[in-house]
Length: 501
Ligand code: GLN
Image (cartoon, rainbow, N blue to C red; front, top):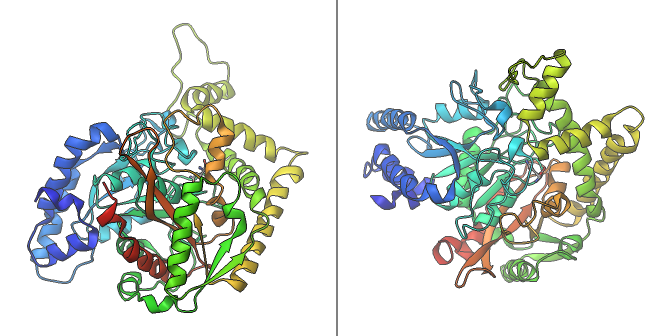
């Protein structure tokens, strides 16, 4: 029973269906695991075992009633602390939202509730999802389960670590420039960033509205399909969602057969294999290239020539939009308000805004608000935001040209494996470069997925290894193919059996 927490969602759902276990048994296994392992990982900002017990008991009633029920019924999940859950704290890992209680449910959470899931707790993140290591959280540093001296990646680092360390069965995160895929790669789990507009963002705290998308972190590809199916779809509360034809992803993935690789054109972008890529990661990714070729795929060399501009275009776009989205945290309407010291007078409303924001936001958030405000300011708009939007058009065109030759694209998810805590904090630019392969996917509104395909030696821990992620990118709204190809690679690599801790 103690090992239930190690199973995938589909395995757990199978046991529940056969009535071999109850949701409360599954939950108890997670509670035990969280009590023993979470103190060293710090994946969660908070757990809510009382709520989880209520959810599990309700799920058990539904299962025993004998009627049909959704697959996520009774499955314990964690949620990045950027999704609103009515009546629960949502901090976005910022002091400015320290005491913020969500007034309503995000659409993702509403759907999870309709699926009778079990809410285990809120996971840690970089403040307002700005970062690649989860070190920008105002509350705690999450550790990589493969090496506690290393980062789990970010910004959904708490979610990735919670899945990797078996502290939940799956997790929901967000991906604006790589925040689901990069931590998934660094922690050895599956990370899916769906097509922009496939999952509603209603009730997800906004960072950069033209890039933000909800994403999934799971133990395997089948679970990613199950979780996607549960939350995808048009939502009248989010104007950016589209009326996509939501497929039966889980069934499609179950049926995925190697034969789909026969004659499939797999694009290898030259720009993803140049300077800055760790040679060991390069060789792991190249092994997959050989594997796909052996299974009948055509390997095609392609070019995404404007990749070199993607980090700059992203950081102008994302900071500009963030400076506007974060304007609402003024100390009046939300969360933290500056407390006047004895004898101090607040000079004006502006003064109160300034003092509340000064004390409430962390350094990285301030850096981005300043950058973004500058990029949008009169006289500079054309030189920065507008130019970044034009570069974005080029990147979209790069992918369009690439998909004329390739059905899917593969490459590394991250240029390096998990780095040491503190290694990049003094140099924001080197941190920004850890997103070099993931950012352009958001700029082009495309779906991308990271799967663990192996591990490299950990240079600072004898006998230790660090996971390596492969990124697969597919055309707009082709998650069915993306997940199917990923499933075939997963079955060949067998990361969970061979490498997972
Ligand atoms: N690491 C990137 C950033 O800092 C991406 C973050 C994200 O996807 N939320 O902006």
